[in-house]
Length: 192
Image (cartoon, rainbow, N blue to C red; front, side, top):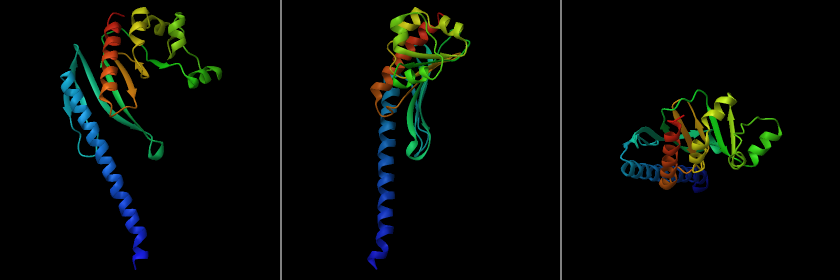
């Protein structure tokens, strides 16, 4: 009799274990986001029991938003913290900036085009794509380049926001340093 129930008991134990792990992860993220909101004077918004929280408001004179997004599904899913900071610069195109790595070198080898701004140190560190190359070079002046050196996460500069994604959803220090670095970039973009 117990032999027949064993698979069901094992499956039930697995479900309980998964639920406990999920609850622990959600609670850690909530605590980190509460701490982040408190540290930066932002508003914390709980989205419900099985949804990630969000932090938003004004920081250093500009609108900011930090939230979690899940890309993919199942074992191929990735959970990111997304940090958005508004800027008032005159950016007319989307610029994607990534740290130079094996993948970006491979992309260049197969023909993907990147923007080179003409500063060797900067060009060697970053892989930059943009549909309007002249606009990308105009926006990425020396002032903006200096601020970008402190950003560790991949980021996009768009018409009125700077967006970065990081895999460290439970690490408040990584999120707070990303937020500060993006505010520095946004301040420089305001002058473009």
